[in-house]
Image 1 (cartoon, rainbow, N blue to C red):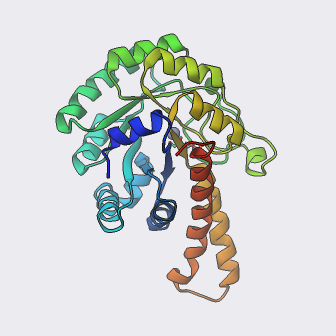
Image 2: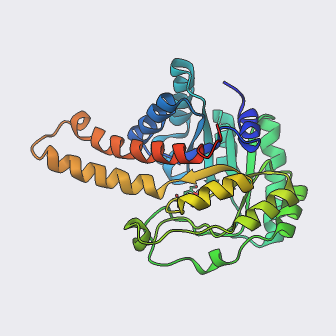
Length: 291
Ligand code: G3H
Ligand code: ZN
């Protein structure tokens, strides 16, 4: 398996885009690994602070290592949306491939100062670690939300993106380019979609030269994903779509097994529903002659 940095380079030079899928438990982990094996594509597992508190920092690191060693899956592990240095260090020490140090809610200068310091400390723990920073707040919930967070309407400019990357030395930048975390009810019903500012993605890529991540991928129009990947995105995050699939899959399975109490008969319903989402999104990210 190539290193995470090589995988990012492969993605940015037009091959094998990195789909990033959040998991909370073993069902989510299985869903991602099954698709990675079946499609033979590299992919990332992300665990936010809440998700890794539930699944366990060391537990998920061991599971990912096992999947690489036993199944040969090109699987990378990301400490998603980490807000404290203490938790970022714990992830680096546990062997995560990437840490997202997320101070996007703080004022710009403070974000730069503290992220720069975090990059130095985290790289001293593991030089090969990839560190991502964020400029522009896009909401924080991978949930069904009633409205678009007002702050997410303020998009990242190429100038502030360039300044942030140059001063902090992050490897990866997460900008606000029309994306937001979570899904509106109309998006869950498939009636509306998130739309991305493709030209801004292109300009930020040119201005920074950094790898770029799209957060808040759930519910984005398919064509915008493809265009934004061509414009310079390297990693695409999907979470709420998986959570919606998990709940629907579980509810359907509970109905089908109305009198069952056996977890391993009921839970595959949720797992299969998440697998469909991962497979569909990963195939789209690697479509259009790429990979
Ligand atoms: O870091 C997680 C992602 O940005 C997920 O966003 O829940 O809108 O797919 P999403
Ligand atoms: Zn995110």
